Amino acid sequence: SAQAPHPVPTCLVHIQMALKRVRKEFDEFQADPPTGCSVQLVGEDFFQWKVTMMGPEGTPYAGGAFHFSAEFPSDYPFKPPRVKAMTKLYHYAWEFDGRESFEVLHDEWSPARTVSEVFTYFVQLFQDPLAVEAPVLRSNAFDLCMNNRELYFSNACEWTIWFAMDAVARLFVRRVDIVGSGSSREVIVTASTMGGNLYEAKTTLGGTWFDVARQFRSEYDLTGKMYHPHGAQMVWPFNPVAAAALDGLPASKE
Image (cartoon, rainbow, N blue to C red; front, side, top):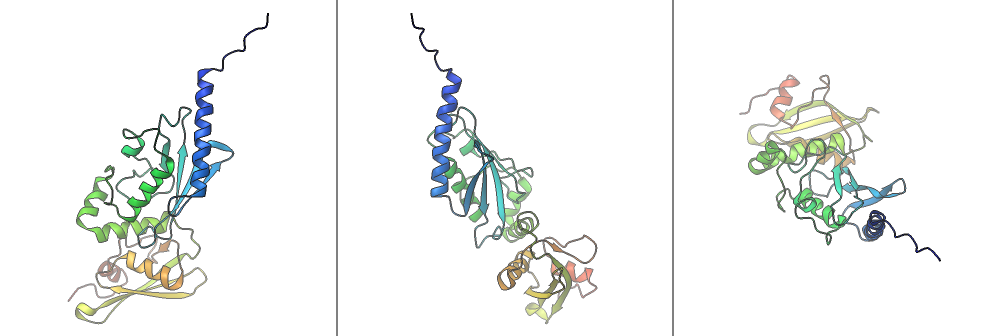
């Protein structure tokens, strides 16, 4: 008599179901991605994605390209994907090594959720660090965000310049001048590219590197790492008084 066909192993059924779901989500992500996001496979493996999120305009992350890995378990969507930031970023909700502990990817995960929803959530956190509830993995950064938002944004801008931008126009800080008097004094930062072209950006005496970098980016379309001429030392976050002292300029406020 004819033998009955062997049943398909349960684990293989789960993998096939997971692959079908992941393929569907990949197609939907490509067709209608979260703002500023794009996705590609790692090789031809649908269980490993590389997601790139561009820093939202009007934030200290603007101009940066932030890369994330997403790995799907064989029993997806019943277990969440493992998502990790591969680009270093300054945000209280991410560890220095890119790890996260978002409830949406752990205790609050459900098979109804999608990776697209996860990255929509990430975009919101980049646009406003306190817009949605998120875990605090770096308490110092969180305290700064709550008590000194300008300095927090300045640090985030610094990390974006150093780690999330291609050094297409590597800038070397050549001079820091304080001009004017009293409360109207300005700081003029002169920088040059490797080709020797000089550029200037201005900020008030209480300004930050976020203001300076934003000017270089908006007025001259210059991005990349910024270096101080005194060895490898940089004045981060930008403190015009300290920078002036470094360059032998008057360092006292009136």
